Length: 278
Image (tube, rainbow, N blue to C red; front, side):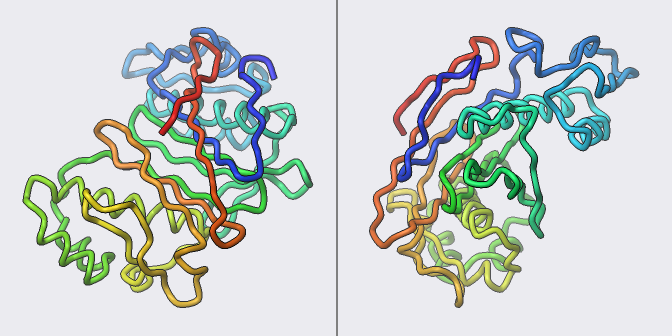
């Protein structure tokens, strides 16, 4: 596929793509933005996306883009969705404009069954000017969550409602200057697991899902709710990102399966993928 380095997705690999949503939309990747739409507009003008000028996006994606009131929100959506289509096209060899998406009960996107054996598993998360897209071969389930580390006014209420007793006790034992980062580590780990599982589990089972919290301890799942695949069946790995807490969760298809995570930078300007270790 033109514009991306072809990276073969192996059976025991997860590819993690980092997408800068602050990239100028029209620099080096003009097919991601319709002609005549600019990201530098006055507050009174909200440019509209029209289907006749952009073959990359589906009608539903165009309608969704046009529901954003703020131009910068529309820009972030277009970059994320365009990058997702191009990344999945590279993994499946299906032209990006021909990819069809389906949505599960929790609105989790997946490639349509009509794509057959070419389908891959994927998940994405975004916050502010950063998006992360994780891709793996079917039938592996994966989840990625990205959270900006920020002050919360209802932190204690959230801890009591969604965190296990052990997580709450460990949180209280930490120095005050470590607590906020520890909370978001816990939250991103739980969210990534839920996204990998693919179903909403409610606050009670969120309490039963127990993950490591201590910043000096290894990242791992300590306990899962009843009826879930055992903790050993999942890879849980933190992804370093300044000012964010980020976690990747991937299903192991056999006990003790060794998984490799490869990280790539998706560049709109340079139209290339750069591999890096994590």
